[in-house]
Image 1 (cartoon, rainbow, N blue to C red):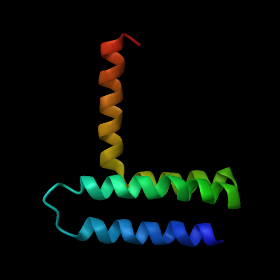
Image 2: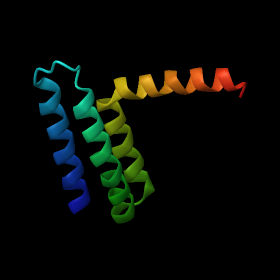
Image 3: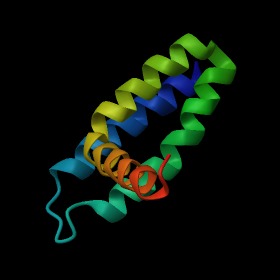
Image 4: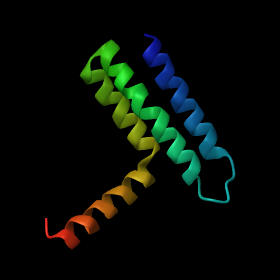
Length: 84
């Protein structure tokens, strides 16, 4: 139960951070949210099972969709240059 409260608190903080103005397009905040969000998803998985962790992970990914798009584009470029 504590893990779900942490996940909800993370989501509220992420939404508040998204509302604040930023000169760097929120990238430093996104790095901090990713660094704190991944352990929380793991903690949710330990306490509540992988199904709930998957739901929490998808919710977090919807909040951090732009960093995920950039990572996906980088991986596609990386794979195309390596011939994978």
